[in-house]
Image (cartoon, rainbow, N blue to C red; front, side):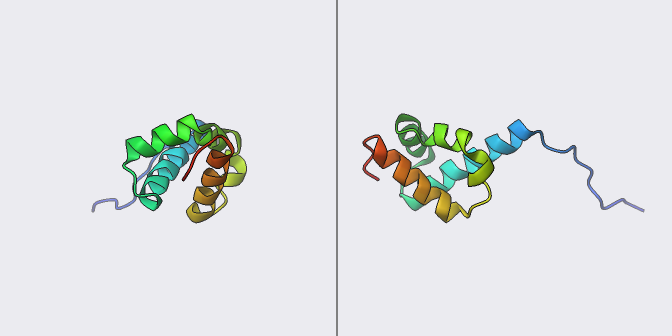
Length: 82
């Protein structure tokens, strides 16, 4: 009989944070009609990536829609226009 359970090692806190940031960049790209590399560059230039790293503990508890709105607000503070 085949065991249907898949055992995986728990993710490290750094991996969880990285996966969340990648997901946010992807969702930001989708919401703003950008490709992923454009979204990443925009967020990097305008402080969005640093914001996600610094505020991960709070942001990851929010919906992606809320996180995207936060990223837009942070980016506008540094000259972003999205």
